[in-house]
Image 1 (cartoon, rainbow, N blue to C red):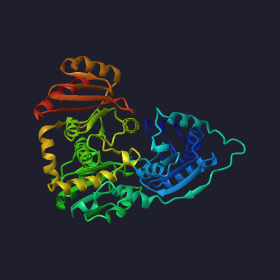
Image 2: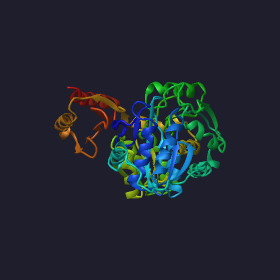
Image 3: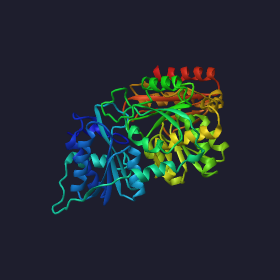
Image 4: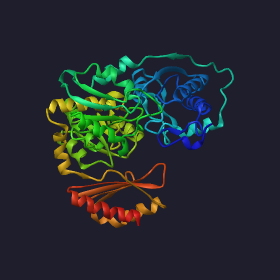
Length: 449
């Protein structure tokens, strides 16, 4: 089964087995190789119940189209990116549905250098080939399939981002959500002096405790409660394939992704390369740009989405990139996103500053007032964007990098359409809470009218 709608803007994702099954996985693996002609590639998989059989068929499809395939087994998505970049492979496939509920399966696909294959970079061509189920040309010899252990090199690489001797014996609560973080973190944690309260570390694709999507408030209730009850220095929650992590401070308050980006940017610029370029997305708080510039870096705004951020990082030679959604990208990690590296950097940062995380964040929380992302279904996306521009163009500088952004004197907003649904996503910020609430209602009134 291969429903065309499983091909999304950035990856492949659908219900198993009604929208995507093993037959579809075989077709995608084969179509990918026929489209991009990788000589050597890697395939890894997450802990979902369908992933072993899905990966087996993706490997078979790829090898029967002529590629040599390294089967790297049960890994987090960032480990697939690492393997492709580190081993100089021509591409790879991670069989994962990321943070989606247990009923889903999917794939994240990359070319050489761990560059993502998305809707604008070949994924639709893969879709068309897979749906046509093109046959392997006569005489095509199957490529060799061999197992490869990427774990030791991966652990060394992520630890290379921090000075382990500078990390104090912090107490941290870690919610792996029965996802890949439960497999990935133990060999890292055993090298650190921290006391980690390990929660839901057993990889289990049925997700018996809660869905592995920490962006939803109901999935954060556990980490908030546990961090405060344990008296921890902070808490961290990972999504299903562990390429994103989300923080709560010592008081149990959620830390927005833009504040994390600001803190990590300052830390990386100070340690690695003062004056370097840092990429951030159009939704982000002014805190990000101001932190980068204060640390001597060059702040570059970009449209949302990992394909666009990774491309811009290569183009600019940027040392770091961060998105509001919890994706953090590192030049020394094939310009790819990682969930484990930000966790390590946060341990180092809190150790170095010698303050509670809530104290480190206080200057940001007292100066920048954010709505978070507010989603509203609308019947006509283009018409609404036009109405917003007409209503607010006299209040600040207008840009169309991604949806519409208006930058005023003491407030700004971005409204962008969803890639998959007829809805608009609003992110707004002001210099005071009252101003934020006032402008939020004004903008929402236009969107909802």
